[in-house]
Amino acid sequence: MSKRFLVAGVWGGVVLIVWVFVVDGLLGVERSVEMKRIPNERVVYETLRRNIAEPGGYLSNPELTPDRVYPGDAPVFAIRYSGVGHASAGQEMLIGLLVCLVAPVLGAWLLSKTSAETQASYPQKVLFFVVLGVVVALFGDIGRFGIGGYPMRDALALALRDTASWALVGLVVAWRIRRVVVAEG
Image (cartoon, rainbow, N blue to C red; front, side, top):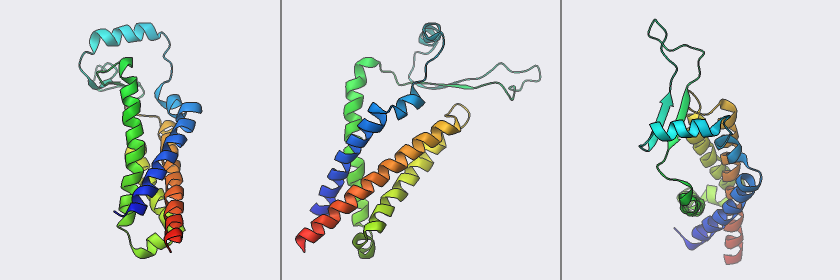
């Protein structure tokens, strides 16, 4: 990968970090999906703490009917336990920052492997990143909808956030590559 694509990817990563800080940190988009409050949280917490010791994903199904089937209208609850507590928050933040830097650099590398026509067109470079965002949204966010997953509204909110994030990265990477080409030419 040429230096101009690497630099553009790093610029995209820096802008992505600022974007995530604003959208998730200040506006609370992810928090509104991931951290809804539970009534009687202490009771639920103690029940989970006593019954779930191993990290993993769990489903809590309703009791079977006398016919040995799950009631169709009864809720199914998903529980995720990673095995870490609040002491790991700083480590998780560092991993998140690393992902925010690496993902745009990988996107810029993928862009460097496209045709010269794509690389010469500002709209096509941006569209390239928007398509990456749509792929992330479809397979990452929308794919988490369903039994034990997110309600559709939350999956769509995350998908929209991720698509917008990649579109913003695409605008920055395309602008930076264009600026470097102009400066070199």
